[in-house]
Image (cartoon, rainbow, N blue to C red; front, side, top):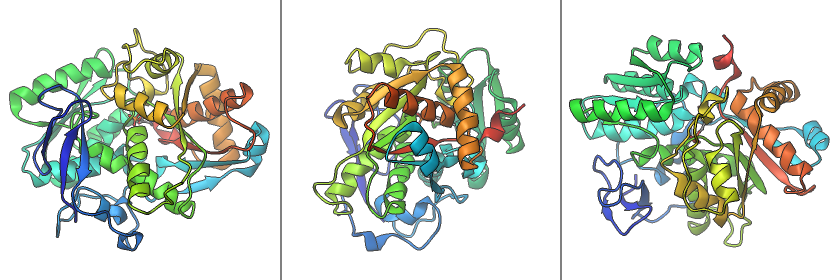
Amino acid sequence: MSTWHLDCSACDHTQGGDTLASVCPSCGQPFLVRYDSPWPSRDAILPRWDMWRYAPVMPLLDGETPISLGEGATPLHELPKLAKEIGIGRLWVKDEGLNPTASFKARGMSAAVTRAAALGVPGFVVPTAGNAGAAMAAYAAAAGLPVRVYAPRSTPSPILATIQALGADLQLVDGHIGDAGKQSRAFAAEHGFFDTSTLREPYRIEGKKTMGLELAEQLGWTLPTHIIYPTGGGTGLIGMWKVFAEMRDGGWLPRDVAMPRMVVAQATGCAPMVRAFEAKADRAVPWENPETHASGLRVPGPLGDRLILRALYESNGDAAAVDEDTIRANTLRLSRASGVDTAPEGGCALGVLELLVKQGRIAKDAEVLVFNTGSGASYRF
Ligand SMILES: *Cc1c(COP(=O)(O)O)cnc(C)c1O
């Protein structure tokens, strides 16, 4: 129910909204969706129980039905005992493992597939560290379109099985998501299939920004002091930071609202964003030999590096990495303290929280929200 255009995130290039877009044709950086229609009041939120309840502030045209499988509307659990143990004021976990195909990738893919299908693409192709491929397979099936998925051979087998069960043409790649990306782009160029890689189209961000809308609504239109986000390509972090400003400017939050400090959590085996943040850089240097069992974080050279770093600097945020044993220990710890079947990426977020509290980088009175981005079940094999 909105109209929008696309602004390049790095240069002056701008173009009309409802076109099939990839990256900026003049500089190769990601586009951001900018709304032309006035931001409606909170009363415009729809009475439906998925992320499309926020359709009036999302890229959806009048009268259009989104391609949806019930993504979003995930629970937010407060964990007072764990907050005390770690030594902070309040702690919540948002459980994104309950999404279709068991990760928050569903949000982005629902938005991206809705737009691309409306514009008549013949099919989709995506490189993935795992969960994006499963989500892509599901939404392509819902749209009735073919999809090819390029995934590293090392992807957890339950995720590969899900991709195949949903009818995608799965191609195993020797290497990491960057290697999968090269093959995926070559295939897209040859066959005209639409490439839904992270930040190579503008709408996955708009789907993932609904996490920010949702957590604010769940907290009674207030925000936590810190958000700990297990970061691979960074879509969710970028999307939430974007929507917090949209909500403030649109009157959904007070003008003087204290914005959350955005915190990147990564694994020490693949921490390009942590290294760039520590160097106060505005770009990240790709990580050599990325290795972590938290496969969603195995993204050595994110295309959205500038946007991630911008969100960290603007929010006075932070970034840290923890090792594989700390991730394993905190995955079990979060599971047992909350009942949420935690993915390693969620364990990584909790490990980073504890590290930052120990180092005095997160204060004792902080009210912190950590993301569990997937389901532990996808990693047991
Ligand atoms: C993709 C993924 C991430 C990283 O998400 P980005 O928004 O790309 O940074 C984290 N956790 C899980 C489980 C994922 O699938």
